[in-house]
Image (tube, rainbow, N blue to C red):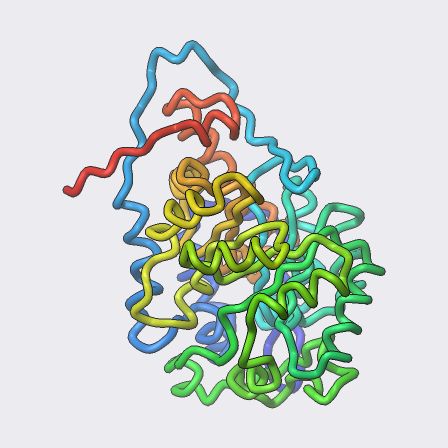
Amino acid sequence: MVMTNGYEQQENEKILNILNLTELEAEAKKIIPTGGFGYISSGSEDEWTLKANRTAFTHRQIVPKSLSDMEDPQTNTNVFGLDLKTPIFMAPTAAQGLAHAKGEVDTAKGVAKAGGLMAQSTYSSTSIADTAAGGEGAPQFFQLYMSKDWDFNKSLLDEAKQAGMKAIILTVDATVGGYREADIINQFQFPIPMANLIKFSEGDGEGKGISEIYAAAAQKIGPADVKRIIDYSDLPVIVKGIESPEDAAYAIGAGAAGVYVSNHGGRQLNGGPASFDVLESVAKAVNGQVPVLFDSGVRRGSDVFKAIALGADLVGIGRPAIYGLALGGADGVFSVFEHLNNELKIIMQLAGTKTVDDIKKTELLNIHY
């Protein structure tokens, strides 16, 4: 490991022998410093919504199809014109240097090796260009936290375009930071600079808490802002943080190329619904006009299957990949994606679905046990 401003960063690089993704959290907790682990793992307030994100997947059931006369299910898909080996993607997750010295660069390498899509955060530990280079040409999206400083927004969008980002993910559910008690208890401030913040009034994030960093972000975001980002970036813009059909309609009306259903992993509005429980209503409102992305609480191949069956085109993971990063670097991230993809293939076989398109045609049961 290495020390950065008194913070221990891991340097592990190894393939992981994974039993399940839930166990990774306990293993990662042993090696990530307390403040960093609390920031990564926690939700807001009493974490009701964080926990509901997992419980929600039990609300729907997959019907086995045993006489489907098929084998060797395939997870490849095409979304936004991108050929991907898996519908599982890396959700934008901040400050990955808290888990590993190489941060987002190693994550990008691992995701690329798995044939997936990487989304990098405005609040990354590494720069847009360095993270893009880590993917060695694999497709990446850039997630924007819109700043009050329009010049800052323009600079990031310019860098993203120059680095070859395929789309912009505009996050709209973080106009303020959720009340995260773990950060308060740990008196957590970021020990590692955020590379994308260095050039502007936001500083570099070092020595600040997440609420201080969010204070520089726009607290007021509407459809006109979505259109402004679209017009300036000249890239497809996906709006992240959508949990209602109304917001989906506003986003598409403003020209969004995609809708991203997420409650920020239970880190923002505590007491709101699990993302999975609103996915179907949002997807029905979208009605195939644009692709639907989804994250929050995904830990199993069956979770991925169910999300696709209810309307998601891509399904994101965040914390499990970060735990894999801490434990094994790029190979650890690859191991996480491979494990989840293998679980998905088992579910596909047992459910009689040969392709991702077949999953989309699957009807789930809704039995209240």
